[in-house]
Image (cartoon, rainbow, N blue to C red; front, side, top):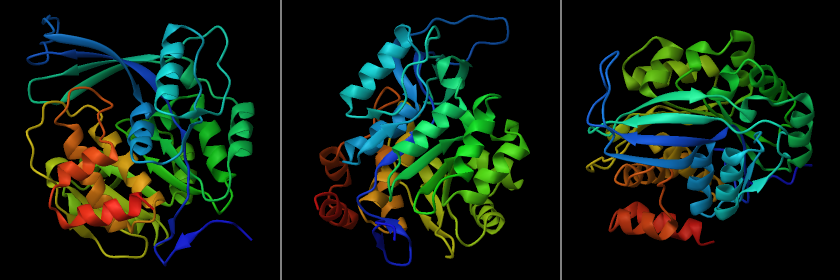
Length: 335
């Protein structure tokens, strides 16, 4: 019998670890007044080199007390070393050894005055998963773990088939969380469908929901996606400042409002939401309470510059103030 500790019919796992089979890369973040016209140029007001990608999800979960493992590939050059250093600082364990003679990739992120971000990515070691890597990830798992899969990895020609095969082989006691990502339309059907069939939760933004369902309305897209995936899969559709739409496994759609803040940088907001949601589920909160906490974590993140700006527990509780959900979060996270 599995040692998975399930709380009620929602399938909430307590004592879980987050195992991210995604991509932690280096971000070159440039703040610009607006995107330049084609063939034009623009001066950045500020530039920073940070670790990003899946690192942001791991950081958000770790800062709320969830044990986390990075199960993606990483390189041996300066970018790979930076990723490993930052993962270690946040208390994230590594599953795989460095890929020799190849550095970790990087992403150029342009953040405009409205807080919106635009990306261009150069792939590296993180896009070179092997079957041996997949076996190492399977060997590292234990009952109750939560595995997060990113659509970025599924869209990569090498990683996609490896990850799809990995997901198909996961034991039933492992929960699978999918973030389809902005490249979801470029994921081959033979790679995406097995992951959709196996995932327990999918978390996406409105654009990704539209690409998956053809529906622009957030509620309609969430409902349609839940119907497509079946009653065993939960859907969390992020709607930025409007909060999110939640369809728990076998349940009805419900809107959980966001918190109005002045956004200075939306880079990493979706990752903060995903990481917080996973951590709060792992601490035993029901999906609605976890989603409310995730809304607050994402709202906090966009008020800070940088991609990895998810709050600690103390920061999240202070941000919530007298909100009734603060007491519930505090009780669950301090158990």
